[in-house]
Length: 75
Image (cartoon, rainbow, N blue to C red; front, side, top):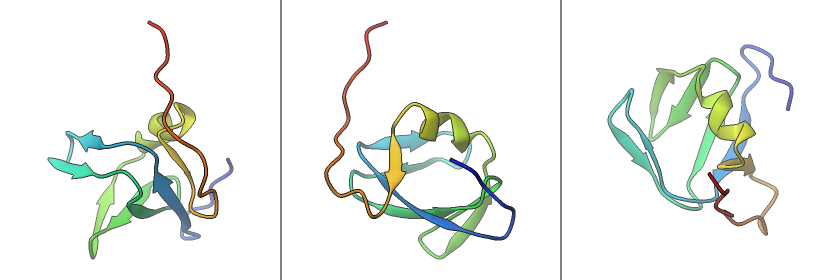
């Protein structure tokens, strides 16, 4: 997924995710906006460039993808 600063993409959480850096939980099917650096959620903006790792792990998908579910990976 390619990101451009200032061009936000809507993403859907496929599982509950705790974002320790900001002390918030994102619940399954919640929609966030992300531009590769900044996350918008609940009327707030947070600098979370490390959210890219959660996207690579499959915890977030494009909001238009309404069928993907979380599949735990083997350690």
